[in-house]
Length: 362
Image (cartoon, rainbow, N blue to C red; front, top):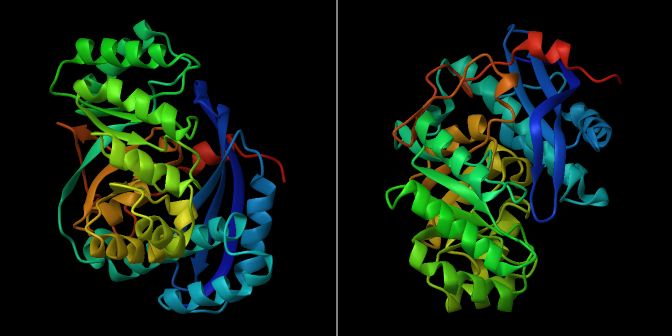
């Protein structure tokens, strides 16, 4: 099997309403779809994304610059291809756009490998479970009123979720506390509430806020301070009785090792696009296990199921519905869990009717 062509398409996915956190306002999600074609007829598929479709052209150009390592190659030599791309990106930097492009290619290659083997990737990697806990993360935004939070939360429960994420970061901390208390009262004690401050606080603010949330049985506090402030994270971790989660903003296993060595998290949250694809994600899961740290995957729900089904220390996946329109197959949540896909490769295939209707001009 040899790679014959690499195609990219820029697509804009409309959102029903803006997504507002302490640091972002998102009106739509832009993606660069990648198709890696082979002489066997098999096609590997994946995407990278940008909020509000900004920088899609940059992602597309970076992917194009790396296709020199693909054409004519056997996709099963994915580790060799990864190392070639990694080395080639050294002069321009081995974080940011470079890693996003590598991730797009690497995961599409793994999709091809699974299809060629006629196996879902979670089994090809060595399965450890058939379903995984998923938490709802497509709502409970900072912009929602308390009534809207409660309505959305009941909607998530009706969809089958038993865990959901609430955004924090109001200008007045008492507003965050009041919203969290109202949500807990509305959904009861059996539903897990996770919180995410989106890097908006200082360590002192985060500690004060967490101590007032502790009696609400909060599952974790995510990124309370800027992601690069590992000392701040470690200080918070030791001062509160809520598990601390972070890691989505750093790159590759080397960035994850720095976080782990800093003892800055209770739960590590790698992001597929920033980690460098499934090759690096597998290494990161193994690395975290050596520190006795669980992982929870950040967005990219469809692709991340292959990690969740094969990494014993993966405790959950983040479920967002932003990218669901890209795929023919739809994930189902039952009693808080998503079952692993059984189709070969990633287990999901692009809906090109939707893609064609939402293409962006070159």
